[in-house]
Amino acid sequence: MLPSFTFMWRNPEHWDVVVNGSRAFRIRGDRKEGYWVHDERTEGPPFPRHGIGPFSSLHAATLWITSTLMKEDL
Image (cartoon, rainbow, N blue to C red; front, side, top):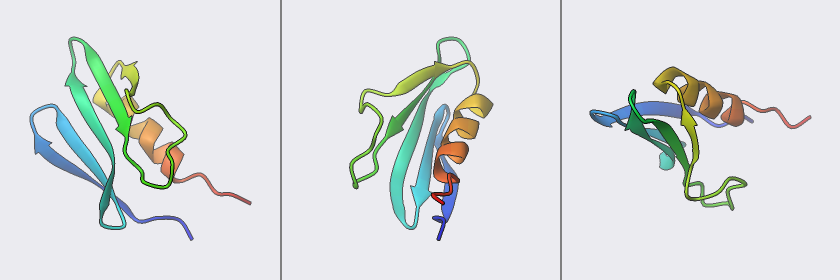
């Protein structure tokens, strides 16, 4: 079963992604310097803790997270 997830605005340039009640990713950054995605999943994230990026837009960062979470293991 795929996880349920929500994008939550914390404050300007700070977004959190909550998966089944726990923060799994955070997005930090701005248009000028780019956006960084930090993987905070507890089950051993496959991505570096220092972040993935920079992404050129908030949209690109959210697309990356969405495609990561919606991966179906068949």
